Image 1 (spheres, each protein chain N blue to C red):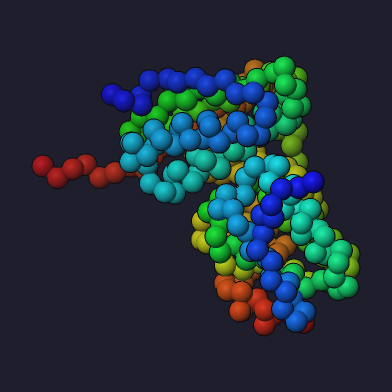
Image 2: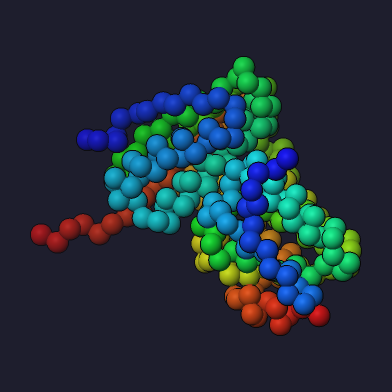
Length: 143
Length: 118
């Protein structure tokens, strides 16, 4: 079935690389009939995850790359973003919605990913983020 | 030197209305340029009254939100006022999830926002 295989893209640590990975995943999502809301969620989450990997993970080091592994099936999109940085502790990121943090300009990417994706989990000491978007259930076709 | 402007800027009597030319406000370099352009508007105004319209915007990232927060802080440092308008339901949800709908004064239309300036 087209799109169900796992694909891999290796990106340079540049922000203009992000759109290429988003377009590849969204093309498959479109083929599988993911609606505009699901595609919005995937695009936003990939933007945040890959930008974080380039900026905070690889520290914009041109010698380091970001690997995006993805598969899209009729019901599930799974995207893993891995950087080559020093890792981090996801639980150490302060809650940006607290009143004392509301006027700080940084620290909202991870919370947006968690809000928009069905699942988001870190591995390899924070260097890899796996995001899953479960497509909304559809009623079975009438016999 | 920055490239072409990413904004459509209209100056009314005392309110500056800014619209984005990009549908996607995602790329860090573009966001930085947008921030610098708006910052110049704030610096040039005595007491800035700034209205930002999101009419054409389909996507925005946390970096864009960060720039809006910085803009808001700079406007307030000059005792100015910032209003946001024409935000689609999908984009408004991003503001709501991050609770920035509490920080910003958001209006349905630019006309409504214009009337809200003091």
